[in-house]
Image 1 (tube, one colour):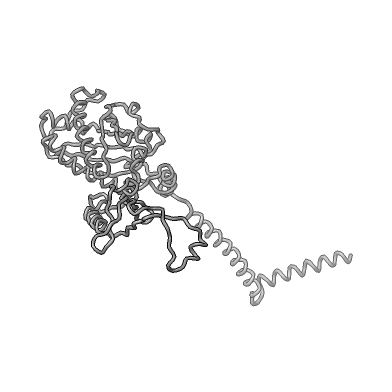
Image 2 (spheres, rainbow, N blue to C red):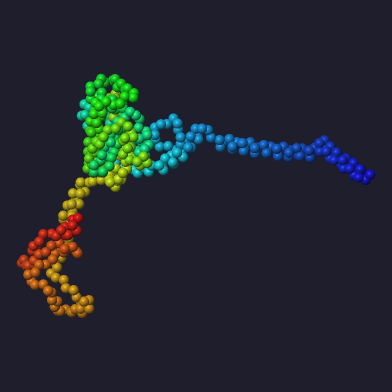
Amino acid sequence: MADDLDQDDMAAAWEAEMLGAGGGDDGGGGDAFAAEWEAMVGGETGRTSSASTIGAERVLNQDEIDSLLGFDLGDDSGEDKGGIRGIINSALVSYERLPMLEIVFDRLVRLMTTSLRNFTSDNVEVSLDHISSIRFGDYLNSIPLPAVLAVFRAEQLDNYGLMTVDSNLIYSIVDVLLGGRRGTTAMRIEGRPYTTIERMLVTRMVDVILDDMKAAFAPLKQVDFELDRIETNPRFAAIARPANAAIMIKMRIDMEDRGGRVELLLPYATLEPIRKMLIQQFMGEKFGRDNIWEGHLATELWSTEMQVEAVIDELPMPLGDIINMKVGQTVFFNTPPDSPIELRCGQVSLTRGRMGRVGRGIAVRVDQPLSAVAHRELFG
């Protein structure tokens, strides 16, 4: 019975408390509870929306992903990529900047402009597009066919190079040399191999370019470039391993409304014998050689004074005897008066002669020419 009364009293107390919270006179307790509940719910909602906003900002579209990875499907220019792809590709080919090589090919462009004008009797403009580094295998796979590939040999460098002439330039050269009309596009027949006449005309143009390359390298080193063979299939023009690095030079040849491209490929192994000369910095076209300074240095060397000693004889003596020497003591040599004496510059023996007297001075008459050892030590 007592338990029932306790439960009834507890239920009445709960009911009174609920009534007081919901419909009390001031309603302050209920309002405070509701405000607190709303703030808690609002805070959770705000945090949820903030987290959603942050998550939405981290979502990248396809263009941003391509830019991050360095892939651009619409760009076939072959230029350096950025992003992860750029990092990977930069590790593939170690490009060493060769400042002197750039000037060599600038000189080649000027020489080709003159020689090709004489070769075609037409207005020819040659321009250097760019110089880049590439794997040899990647270059062979990127050659647009049909094309003529000329394999040439650098005699003094004991290696090979590759020259590629595209089809547009081939047909343009044929038109120019055989009297084709200007302003008309050369008719191309797909799938037809080049004829003997076309190959011979292109071979003549390749010989002209190789002669200009010889003249362009002449201030740096005498290199004879000789044509080895002409190929139309890139598989037969392999002059290096596919993984070997090479320097690629792209040039554009324009003959008014006709023209095409010539590409030169020089493996790093070909340029290795002259690499030290290619990495040097220089001014103008003198390739690091100043004739004015050479003349001034030669003039100063010829007028340089040097001390020459005439050695009559050498007598080995103990150090104790030398220390005990006194004034007036006589030292005897094993040399007669008419024996030849030696002329020295420092520790280098120059020549031999005989001692005499001219007036009040002692003189030496040279009897032998300058020795080979002295000439090598003094003049290299």
